[in-house]
Structures are given as structure tokens and as C-alpha cells.
Image (cartoon, rainbow, N blue to C red; front, top):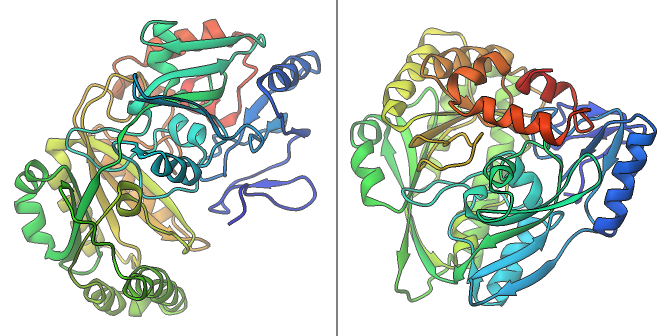
Length: 439
């Protein structure tokens, strides 16, 4: 995949192919100074500004008809502080490069999501997360950040410096300014043992609390139209390293998880009636396996089948009930869903608009393969999620607006007040932010 999702003749497209925009101009600044100059020039020309990462969001959060800032020259590690155990990286650095660079230095993030394509600023600004009992999203591991605001000034934010901006800007949706550098907490590299095994839907849901409590990182995928799930438990290990052998890894991760899955999606699109049978076969194709490796090799996996996704965070105690309602809805409908439903968790955090802000959360993600009509499925799922005061992932498909967010985020007003202060002229506005934050 190229480093930036794009299209022909000045049209920008996202990774999922469901969002397109035509910016008035594109700027690729090579320094913070060039970026501040671009923001000031946009103001003189009366244009809005948006920074875009790899286009991994399924919402139009990065779309603009004004100035599109591409961050690919703002990459790399600025500083490693081994006393404070932090690393400062430029905002355009892809997570993949960060993970590999840290590993070479004998360091690692504590937790991460399962995709490494995003830039660090794109991933954190939208609240990207993995799964964890004690460890939260990527943004929850931020110790400091540098932000270019609407008037072209550069703010350094941390718990000590501009703390009220720090509380919000870690997941700032691109609404408060353009993030130029991020300081993450890191730790000495460690080993994780992953245990992947099939388990019935009924067993996972009836023992969910124990599975969550017994594992540092627990997640599972449920195959709709079946009673089957695939579970994954990641826990710290004293070793030794025991990676998945290369050929076996290729067969399981590339051939089964991506190749056969892609074929199953094609067949399912051509003949939706076959989906339940395909799902039964798919759910049995992945057998149990255990392996031990450094964190990013365990947490992340390649995603070659393009899709569109909706994900909601519900209170952790509501997850089983929500899943059962989702299953009932599918059983009663004519929907044929060929993509597994993904379930993860996160502890409560203190970030203003984090989906886990102030409450222990569980994430339920529904997907459809790129190009298939997803509205009916997502609308029905969203009705269930919102009945549980669900909070949608900022970078994934949803239909909620500021009125709804004001109800499900106790500190919503704190964020919009800060935005009024930092961006009174709405230099960083776009249609998406107008909807989710209000005009």
C-alpha cells in the first residue's frame, strides 16, 4: 500500500475508498516552520486546513476542499530519553517505522492496535486502540505533544505544560490544531505469548468476565451466522522466543487470513446465499496456535482485504448483552454477513473525547468488504450500540452528531470550549467536524 491514499487529478481518496475530496492545494512541509507558514498562508487566502495521514479513517475526518497537509516529510525519531523512558517522534511517522525503530533500540510501546499502516498522529487523533485489561489506546500512552494552532503558534503540551490542551489534544480529531510531534511512554522490549484458539460464541459470552480478568490482552472474532469465534490471548512471557515459523505464518496469516478470506468475500458478493456455509468453513479454517515474540509482531497483522468498518465502545459490563442483541438482529434479518465481528476492551482513561473516557469499555466492530452495500447492516448495528450509550470510533463509519456526543461524553463541552479558544475562526473545520462538534 502506498504511504498515502490518493487518486488522480487532485482528488484525495481514503483507504476504504468510501471518501473522496478535492483540496484547493496540497502542501508537504519538511519542517514545523514550513507547516506554520502554510497555516498562516491558508488564513490569508481564507482557506481551511486539514492534515491527512494514510487515509485509514472511514469517516471524512480528513477531507477538505481547502489546504491538504501531507506529513510524509515530517517523519522519524527526534529524541529517545532513556531516563524518562520516552521517545519523541515526528507526526508523520508510520506506526510500522516507529515499532521497528523502537525494537532496534530495545524498546516498545506497551500496547498497540492491529494495523501498523497509520501515521502516529492519524492513529492517535482518531483514538486508535488495541485491546487491554490495564493498558489503553495508543493516545493513552502519550506523555507530550507539539501542536501548531490556528494562529501559527507552536504549543508544547503535557501534564505540566498547557495541561488543559493536553487533556483534549491527545485525541483531538484534528479540530484543535495540527500535531507535529508526539512523545510516547516506552518500556524495555518484552515478549508476549499469544494463544489463539476457536471457542463457541456461547462459551465466550458466558465466561467473558473471566477471560477478560485472566489475560492482559483478550480479544475475539465472532463469525456471523455461526456459533463460532476465534479467541486471542496475549500475555507477557519470560520466553524463550518462539515465533510462528515462516511457512506456517505465510499459510495462516497470508493464505488463510487474507487469501482464502478474499476469495470467500468474492464468492459471498457474487452469491450471498452461500455466506452462512462459507462462514462455517472460515470459522474452522484457523486452528489453535501458540507463539511467543516481541510485541509488535504479536499485536499487529497484515490487512490486505480492504473493508469499511463501524466500531462502537460500549460500557464493558454491557458487552455480552450488546453482542447477543446483535446476533438476534442478524438471525431475524435477511442480512448475510461474511466479515467477522471483532471484540476488544480498554480501561477507562482521562482523555476528553477518548471512547474510553471515564469508563471501562468494550469495543464491538462490524465490517463489510469494500464495495458491498453496508448501510442496512451498519444502521441496524448502530441502533443496538446507541441503545447502550455507545461511543463510535472517530475514524469509523457512524451517523452521530454533536447532540448525541453531548449526552455520551460528560466532558464534551470542555472540548468544544477549548476549540472555541484555539480555533475561533474554524481554520481546521470540515463537514465532519461541523457534524460531530457542532458549528
